[in-house]
Picture 1 (cartoon, helix red, strand yellow):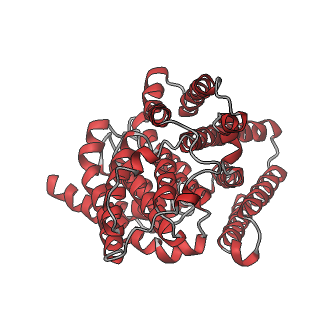
Picture 2: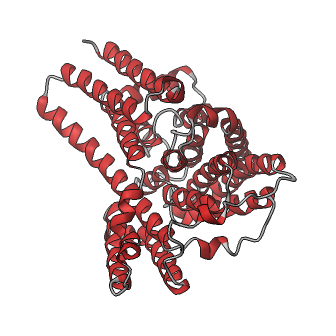
Length: 435
């Protein structure tokens, strides 16, 4: 089988999986099942074509390692959030949010998410902020709209920080960008990419009140099990672990999931020590990290595994590299190519797309902090907001709130696209003025 035929078969299988995921509620087939079947079929076809079993095993192990790192990080962060929530830790924050208007809440959430994402990363920030919205909003439609806003804000905030998004981190570590330049030159476009959809969404919300969850729904069965001191302690400990993960990575050079797992162990230890003398066995077990592990959405994590493995086989089969080369020949203009790559990052994971681009263009041709690399950081970071499964932040939000793919396409994609193009135009204009 020729390379072209293989590319078409793998691309076709990926497209079919994508359509089935989008039609999940119509077909009544869980998206996790579709993602796993798609990944299994694509790897099977690739294995039948590959003549070198050793190379195939090495590629699969490489893909599995990268996938496992992200999955362990996601599981750890979600579990930490569940532990904080079980201790009513988020009530410490929500009690201080006094606004009764959705428009004001949208501005607060959007700006907070934007800056928090630059400090943590877009995935962790999304998990924390979507979990907060569950404590503040009762209507599902409102929570979904805010989840879409959080995805846009988290991806925009991650694009201008060297630790805020994995693709920006890749370019930073690879020497394509420097931390000072990316902050200075991509900050304003990222702000614009958030302000456009945020302003439109706040306008939609004009006059609408915040409808909080009823107290009986907001409380876990059995009433409050923690003191205010315990709630504050677990909130500070949980968020502290997540904030310190980038520091852990910088100091040890270990992947972020190791920092999360270390923090998870510390929280587990503190929780056991905190509650070991409580007389009520049922309440004590409810507050343990072991119970929190049963509350995370494993179906969404399995879906994440399927999507990442599907994209990985496209990368190993050089489908993505061929696509990048085709764009280079067909489009020609560098700014349009990068914008298109950003749009494609909503369909295919932005990590292999950026990796393919780093392989296509050399530092000799495009030096550090050149137009290509900075614009790539912006487009690859924010383009994933166009679809709910276009970024790790979107997948996390989808799992936490069970957001429908087509609903996001109808209600959020247009807003995200407007912000994406406005930010891109801002960067190009800013670059021309400065240079």
